[in-house]
Length: 424
Image 1 (cartoon, rainbow, N blue to C red):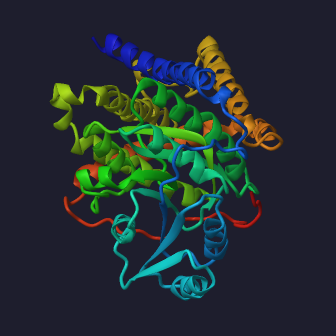
Image 2 (tube, rainbow, N blue to C red):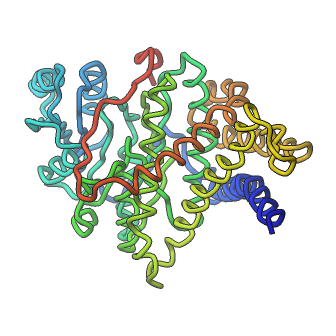
């Protein structure tokens, strides 16, 4: 019995990431040949049959260092009819003063001030309620949109009446450290590939909180963004899809962002992401008992398997850690955490194959820059697999113990060591 259980857990810990890697590869490649390869260049956006007015909503919390660049780019986008609504969520730095100055300089900029920190969900909701337009594009206060991004995002709403949200393609700006370089590859080989595959398989786990367009009427149906969820982007993605709306991924809608470049900042960010996943895992299991919600079953099962895999990996590492200090019976001894022989070779080959394919797919967006970061991706399994395991293990009890209804407020995240190093 014990041998059967340990054998099953060992098989699951090995085959789960292997299976998911090839699932993402298959879906990503199919997406490329089905849609992406026929697309015109990013700087030649499609001509739309209609150009509905758009409101660009930027929630801000202590974004004084980045805000001028973000607003300057946002107000100069290439689109016929749009406005920018910046929401200052009780900032304690000079964000409010900067926004007032910028409002006097840019006629298409409106500024809303919230006296106290209400949280990103409330800031987004205030911006949405202040907007007279049906199409809302939400970006973070440090994000820089590509000048043609609105064309690529809006086309899905014009041609798809059931489209509720379109998530864009975040690109890393700060690349001065090892963590920054690894994240360049991660957003291409992991996040971009997963989004493509999920678009093919029918449901997307989450839109990207840093750049997503929404249909306002769809948001109204589901009650806008939840104020008590740690990741409002994951939660609203699930509620929209459970309400039978469609969510799409648009890789041509580029958005340049700043990411953590310290282990502490990266830990806090990924713990928040993991807790957000755990919260929807707990919140929506009853909804998924309905046959009408069956299209979300695979997304839920994949999330459940991901969390389970993290715990299996953590439990597998426990005897090894104990064995470093105490002698253990022969049946419990773990000599090494490295995969044995052919298993390790297969996992390593799959990891590198995934990076090669995904970087090839993303080459049209950064033709001379993305490939050179391939070398640094050799560190990805060591840094990020370990980080994902630890954050998933910590996040689940945090989500279980969280008091229901408690408002989720935000603090400014780590924006990297050299915030202005690379401009798009």
